Amino acid sequence: MRAKLSNGGCSSSSCGSSEAPRDMAPEIWEKIKDHPCYSEEAHHYFARMHVAVAPACNIQCHYCNRKYDCANESRPGVVSEKLTPDQARRKVVTVANEVPQLSVLGIAGPGDACYDWKKTKATFSAIAGEIPDIKLCISTNGLALPDHVDELAEMNVDHVTVTINMVDPEIGAKIYPWIYYKNKRWFGVEASEILHERQMLGLEMLAERGILTKINSVMIPGVNDEHLIEVNRWVKERGAFLHNVMPLISDPVHGTHYGLTGQRGPTAMELKSLQDKLDGGAKLMRHCRQCRADAVGLLGEDRGQEFTLDQLPEQVSYDPAKRAAYREVVAQERGDHVAAKSAAVEEVRAGAAQSFLFAVATKGGGRVNEHFGHAREFQVYEVGAKGIEFVGHRKVEQYCLGGFGEDATLDGVIAALEGVSFVLCAKIGDCPKDMLKAAGIEASDDWAFEYIETSLAEAYRGKFGGQVALRA
Image (cartoon, rainbow, N blue to C red; front, side, top):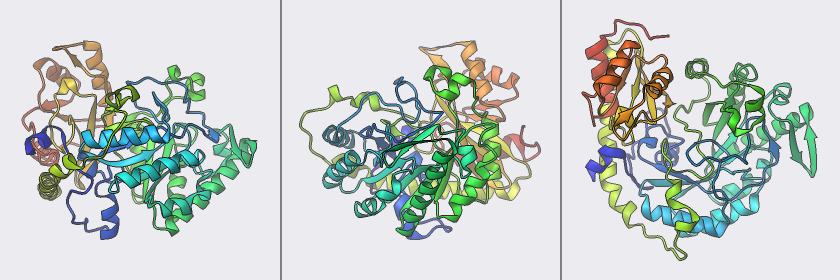
């Protein structure tokens, strides 16, 4: 079992380190310790599942087109199959029996979970009765949220994500062409004024009831990028637990307004720069993968195609055996990882003078356990005077397919690693290593299957010695 963890991670919804971090109340830690979106540490071990039961939506966003779907892409609002509440129950039970990492069930559309409320409520009621230890959470644009906060509290939904892209309706009018509220369609600044007021009211109501809130904001260069500093201040004042700033996805093939009009998304370094400006405000989430509305699995992977409707049994019943079997070993693994991370951070802080960005190829479990050529993303850490901090991830096209790699694909990987000084992976060939070196990036597989933080500390000490500044 421990070997399986080292190779990719496993978990259950009731296992894990029970000791809260020193800067967090124990009751809050209890809520987030196995939630992969609310805890960066937990996302190495725990999986989420979204069920697409809420297709209706009450606003239009310039970055959204829910009609476009490619099963190979991860993008909010995208689904391959819409489900009824009963189909969702069958799917969740099937996944829970097969994926021991599963700890969270979310409803994130493909429309709005609060607007399509009857289906959301029916789905949660059915699942909570059959799998009582699974965490329930929703994602909403906030327009209909105040109408359902009391019901959310009654159903023990203690995690709610609200997408808030503005607190200035003039900026909002550039993002939302219209909203549908009180049986009427509203446009322009007037629409954004209503949306803003409802979002703030809902956020305050959730905070009053002790429901943890995560704010999602889409960073749109030239539209709301600098304004998100103000958004961060507003949501912190109203009790938000996390603020997740996501890059705009604006590929024209998706058919969104922004995509078709040439609005670009931010570069990885532009996103990091904005996140750095928000340091000290509402606590940031930096490990978001902008999941599909039907995603299944660990963050950074999607096993949804393994559980399509045609593959589900007609009759299912929940068997907790697999999740229970992993509890003890995962609890021990997480305890070991926390201790190793703490030691590594202190080691770096004691001797660091400058900061570097490191990219890590991993497929879970908090370890360096992915082949460079097989990676579809790299997790990026900043190592320096502050210790070891996770700062984001970089999605890439898989370089190695069937033992061969295309130079053009490798060029794309290198471009995605902008600002990175060093890559850690489980294995890497001489050719990509040489091409990375020519681009000013060192790579090593010397720390294969070790804990990420331990490997980062050793690589930092051995290769840099704190003498070179962070690459711009």
